[in-house]
Amino acid sequence: MKIIKGLFLAGAVAAATLFAGCSFGSKTYAHYANADKYVAGNQEITEKIDRIDIDYISGDIKLLTEDTDKVTITETAKIELDADRQVHTWVEGSTLHVRYCAADKRLDLNNLDKRLEIIIPGDVVYSDVNINLTSGDLETGNIKAESINLDSTSGDRVVNCEAETITINATSGNLDLTQSGKSDDISIDATSGSLNIKLDEAKNLVVNATSGTLKVEAESVENIDTDSSSGSKTFILANVPESTTVNATSGDVTFSLPSDAGFSAVINTTSGDVRSNIPFTSNGETYTFGNGTGSMDIDTTSGDVIFDALD
Figure 1 (cartoon, rainbow, N blue to C red):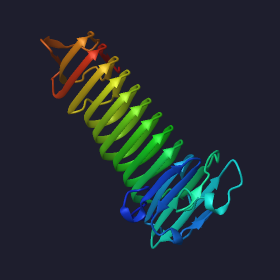
Figure 2: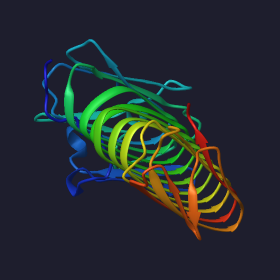
Figure 3: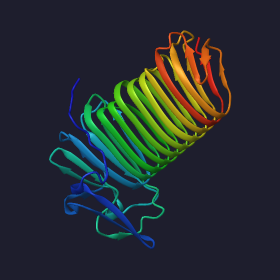
Figure 4: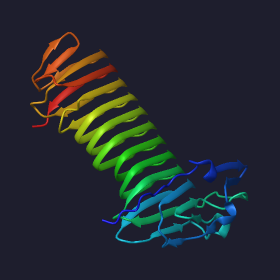
């Protein structure tokens, strides 16, 4: 496998590549450093790219992997775009910067319906993948990286990746995350929308969510820590984690586990029942399943806590 260290997609991560947008009535003013070095329009990047830095204001993004040795950037829109309103790129050494439009101009960016597609080599392991998207849907191919960072405000996200660390901040919209390989840390912070998380093998999973359903399917995960307000929480786990913490306000919490699962669960629920078809013993708020090896701490206000056998 050919390995290139580093694909860095991000907006406004470093001061040198800061992108800021301000609205002036129906006009938008964008600013970022080294604006005079950018070129407008679609691009094919044949140089070796170690880092890519993307900040996109509004529109769908597809970041796809193919059997290729170049990076291809293609943008479409509802109307014909002049150069100022086209995607802008700059190759700085081995870093590719991508911006939504020209800098330091007051532009009417309404009703453009822009869509950005970026195709990257699929046989490359990148060091970082960071994406900053204000409004629009995101879809990725199976990206391999050391770390992946996604920051988006509104829109649905379908993310397929293999990375040591995965960090996702999302305000509104649904998230479908499929992780393959091994991950050390996966952190998700979401406000509203459903979260559907499928894990191959992960050490730590941390999820903070305000509203919306949460579903986690994992072949192997060592530690789970979730804090959410409203919506059901479902955990389908092929192996019992070493430690699991669930804080929830409303909605049922359901665990589907092997019938011979061994763990001890401290369950505190204000309004709701504890139900299980997996044998257990109880002592106050402590419920012991099998050998009691794993540790669970479940705190809910309203909603049942349910344990189901997978087999």
